[in-house]
Length: 193
Image (cartoon, rainbow, N blue to C red; front, side):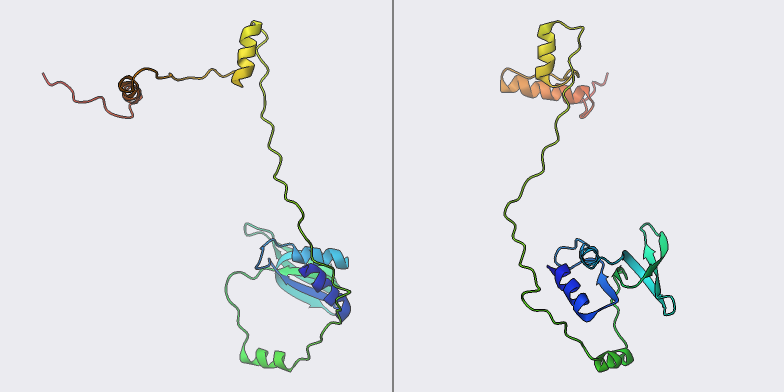
């Protein structure tokens, strides 16, 4: 919806340059600039940090952050769409720049309800398909019964461990014995002779 409104406004104002933020505040998807460029059929450069314009050639040189400290210099003809990444610091205009901005005329684009597309309505949400579990083929050297057991077990890896049965006391003793054997707990006081 935002991209449709911005592209309609850019067409109405006959703009040569559209600057977008890195990402929107509501969803932070970073797609608005790319969608605007796609609808206008203009070139798009993301995450720019600096911009210079040559009036004679009508080329814009932009410095782009490519991640991990890497910077790219890209030349692009106008009209174009750029998304801007200026960092987290708050930038406030000076009094002179504020007065200059207040003196400028603000053009209002001629957008009617007919030019604005309707809202997108989500009709259904699908969960991603689960990844299929890899099934190991049974060892062909085994007899049929053992191969079926391997298939039912789900893998060729033999399970390690001991199933504790019996009374609660014997099960607790089995757990303590396991913890002592694997040195999770010390095996008690040593006899001093």
